[in-house]
Amino acid sequence: MNNNIRVGSLFGIPFYVNPSWFLILGLVTLSYGQDLARFPQLSGGTPWILGLVTALLLFASVVAHELGHSLVAIAQGIEVKSITLFLFGGLASLEKESNTPWQAFAVAIAGPAVSLVLFLALTIFGSQISLPLPAQAIIGLLAAINLALALFNLIPGLPLDGGNVLKSIVWQITGNQNKGILVASRVGQGFGWLAIAIGSLGILNILPIGSFWTILIGWFLLQNAGSSARNAQVKDQMEAFTAEDAVIPNSPIIPAGLNIREFANEYVIGKTPWRRFLIIGADNQLLGVLATEDIKHVPTSDWPHATVDSLMQHPQQMVTVNASQSLFEVAQLLDQQKLSELLVVQSSGEVVGLLEKASIIKCLQTSAA
Image (cartoon, rainbow, N blue to C red; front, side):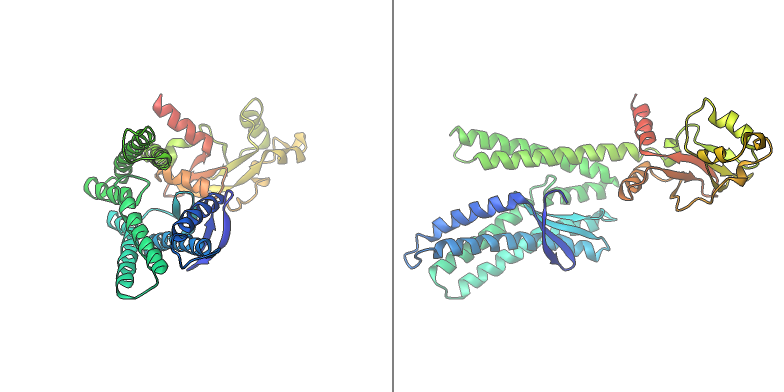
């Protein structure tokens, strides 16, 4: 999990903090502590303790925001891998995308909805309950932060929630999820450049707003939106191909009944140095696997008589994919299960060949040439 520190779990969801979070926690505590020190009834270290409490409540609001996304995703059967607090707020890491545009919309809008509910609840509580001025200031601040959190996240550009809302709308209209990601990513990049421009002009005192933090937020939007756009383009390209398109040419497949002499002459000597071969029957179904090293255990005088069948072993836990399966799904399977190769078969079970990451890359490079 990179350098993230696990601090527990919420509703069964692992909860992490990034080391950058501690920097923000310190800065927020210092800032709020200075504001609270203006109240004459607070003395000594009390303003700083309350500043820390306020900072923690602020981050609790961020966690509640991310839980909004997470609980809706869980209701859709999507696993939430983690919630992480970092420099720019929080991030809920989901196992996969929602199945439909409107499900994606529900996951995206849930976070801002939680923040708006917290804003309303804190505003009503602060106006109805008589509290000391410092407590009123803290509640008013938390209400304002939750409102800002909701409105900022509704900016219609990835990686913000508003970008995911826009993505789901474009997906619904076009029927193409990648198109939605690309549109929302481009809008996100636009807002990123805008924030960088405003921050730069603010630092130069040309604009009354904008600061170094505005530039930093713009850079964050620009980098993440650009990454989303690139991923969508790659996904779009990969979905145009199937597993069969990326099968390794001349995959190590041999017919049953072949004697070892024929096997050595036709498939081993002077050929690609495969460590093992797949043995198929007359119906092209997989029968077993032959390790090239095993032929050394047979005297060469017996090679013309012994068949590869006598040396083959039953394939153990060989993961197979259908030849017509999307190349993007195949690449995900390789990555998620940390596999070096997959066996590609037709729906009838006929062996097509082997596929690996290198052959996927070659397939994409060939198509782009």
